[in-house]
Length: 301
Image (cartoon, rainbow, N blue to C red):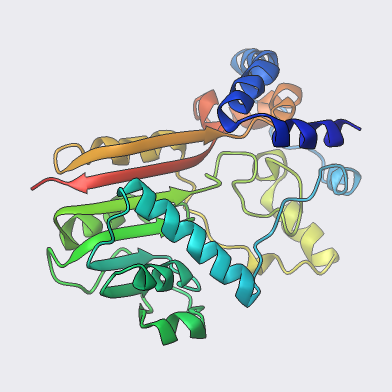
């Protein structure tokens, strides 16, 4: 019944009002969790692995990507529209997509007037449709971009910066290849310290499992149930505070045109119930709440 009520509210209320309702609803939960975290010790450090079996079907499934051709095209269209809307509808001449995956966002931008589009990724998953559209592919990490200085009008990425080994180095490379007046856009989630930050929800769907259970217990459970734990994408374990430090160092060379963060509070009661598992991580409380970041920056001329 509660899920049905939530669906009705989501349909009826505008996004801005839903945000206010959400903050009011979760405010006491956040405060109780914060107090439990502040006054907690660091024991127990980990929970018993027996709880994995007990909890595995307790939490609702997380929505997955649609990897069909139609789904890829739709996602590419949505992402391209988001970028163009933030840039007042003006298509740049050249783009570089970091962590491009199927590169359908780049392919869509080509259809919207972009002259040259490059996709970069450590995995070769670019779709035939993107190649046919004219997207050029670079099969390399984002820390060393093999492009000349001041050569690209827009560098963008979706759900990538939480995976790169060195986000600060990636931003330096972005600054180098961008032309003066060029744009950098990134939208990514979930951050490591947030509820889904291990990106394990398709294997073990327990929020904050990276802090509640030892890694070896998670691996043992996955092996027992043939969940292929090795398929999990690597994450750099950057906290929200660490990413904020990266952004703050951009101020000398970039003008921040848009910046926003989103929090995930749905499973915050886990922090209240087991605060010592989180306290041992030695990061400020708010890092466990911030799930998503979005930034648009313009390189100064």
